Each structure stands twice: as C-alpha cells, then as structure tokens.
Length: 113
Picture (tube, rainbow, N blue to C red):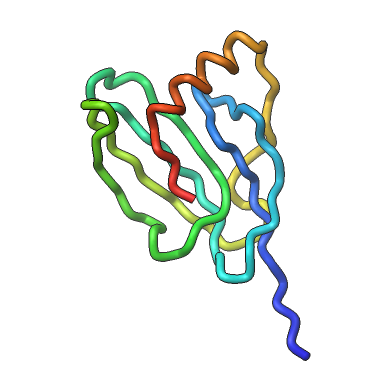
C-alpha cells in the first residue's frame, strides 16, 4: 500500500495591508501539489491590494488573471512553492471593525481555490 503525504500550507482567506485575517494552517488534498500566495489589485483604486494564501493546483502557479466584479476591473496573480508551510507567516488578529470592513471588501473579489 502506497501512502501519499499531503502538503501543509498557510491558509489566509483574506489579507489586507500585509495582515492576514482568520488565517490557519491547512492540509491540502492529495491532488494539490502547491502552496500559494496570491494578490488581487483593483484597477479603479490602484492602492487597494488584497492578499490570500492556501493550497492551489499547480496549473495556476505563476499565472496572472484579469476580470471584473460589479464593473470593477482587477488583476490577480499567484506565486507557488512546494514545501511544508512555505507560503508565509501565521495570521494576526485585528479588531472586529477592521475584520468586518475587509470581509465586505473580500465579498467583491472572487477568491480562487
């Protein structure tokens, strides 16, 4: 019987201003070969960049995607790595009001998993 060891990555559903909200470590499924760090920049604001981390299929690694959500254009990119917990630090807890604001902003951005 052959056992495959699953990769463990840092997971961050949403991060802003260099801080991850609600982050944790996650064990990827057997088919996922990479951890990733991603970011999305909204073209209209130019200054707002949202960050995410987690497990990703390797076919999206190094890719840049563009799209539009509710008329707002965005560009997202994904950088991958393939060793345990290679995609960043653990999360920092922020005050609830900041977390709620970021959650509202993140609802405008489709996160790729």
